[in-house]
Length: 332
Length: 238
Image (cartoon, rainbow over all chains, first blue to last red; front, side, top):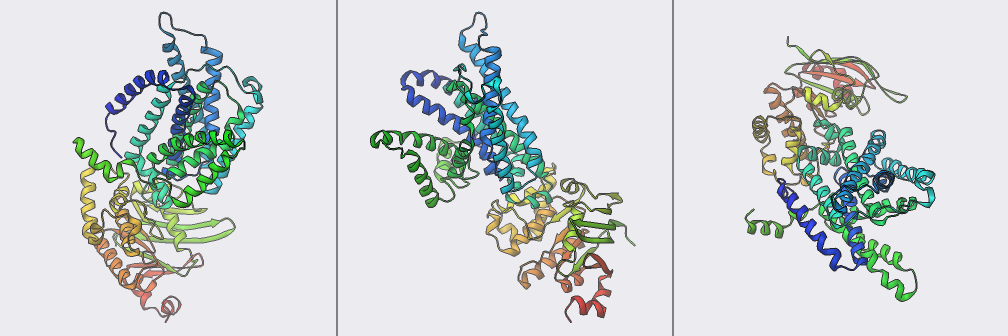
């Protein structure tokens, strides 16, 4: 997995995304652009859930809950404090970028802290039980927000500044993927895999299984929170019903369809599913019937029947022969 | 003669309302093989789990090198020098054999020494070396058991706990595994061996504890137990 050693690929990637971010909104129609943004946010969500569900083997169903926390905290912070703050003598995008970045960190951290609080007791549970607890947690978050009037309650919060752009979405996705990739390359990553493979054996080899499960869960929650903050600042409107359990399932589907434990699969499935849902839209207009979700579900069933391990199984891009040959050609 | 490495003092374990271990006491001497034998449900695995920190005794003391270790977390015990090859082999099925072995040295930082220990494991198990790049789940049962023991050795323990290494293996393979256990012991390793196969276990062990419904029924020199009529009748099926 160690393709991305050192800091320069990350730096180069961010610069490249920055340039691309200047061009893409100019040449792309806004509808396609919004799909592109949602795909990017979904990449972060799927990759981070893959760390918990795929790589550490814990079945969490509460990702939408963490996303909601990140989104609401970031939006509330920016709207009540920084919305009209500008740095003197600097263009607007500097202050916007700065406060967006700040809110991503704060939103992510809030979700991570909550992940710790939820994870510590519930990660002692296994399999189905953990799934039920996290599912319940997600619903609790949604209902809590529904009843908090100062953040809009059921009406939601409108008028969040639209600061999220191509660079931030894909920059976050890149940092998320690279950081998880590095983590899995380290001895900590091997410990996480050991927990997935066999908890008793992991303990017998000296892995503190509870600690590592909580670490994976907290990191997953952090990135979900960051993705939620990006989402809030793109849609400009948050509503509790956006974060119901369907949202969590959607992310789980991405992880399962891509292949549990494959980062490549998570990224691929996130893009694939985001595009698939939208590409079925013309069909609806054509037939005047809402067949979209029926066909979407049908395609998922067919895909899981024909590829039960997902698109990639546990494989990564770097595990394929042609990629290795390509790397050799580059002389790496 | 030799010093006591691990000691159970009147240990009780409860699973809810079930009293699984009833005041068990015994000692494992340094450099010896101690075997725990007994029928199904006698408490063999429970005893081993109380040793390796996988469960906490409800009362009594477990001492390792004179220090109390009951209630200490399993991963800390590994760091203290207790190696454990869990029941049913418990290998990491989707990882390669080499990854399995290196994970055994997970808590260690001394790379050169780890390499030395790897070589040592290859020496003990030439079969394992042949399969180094194979995914561990595709190995035969005997090979998986070898990987599990090898992995436990990789933490460079002072005492090695083996939970039914013969489980589900062909007699020939069992013999091979037991030969290796004896070899590891001859190199100075203290071993606690839990076995269903009482005859085989008594043949290689120095001391034995016979467990029956949660208490230590008999204990003593393995050779004496092997010769005793009551033991032969009750546990060796004669």
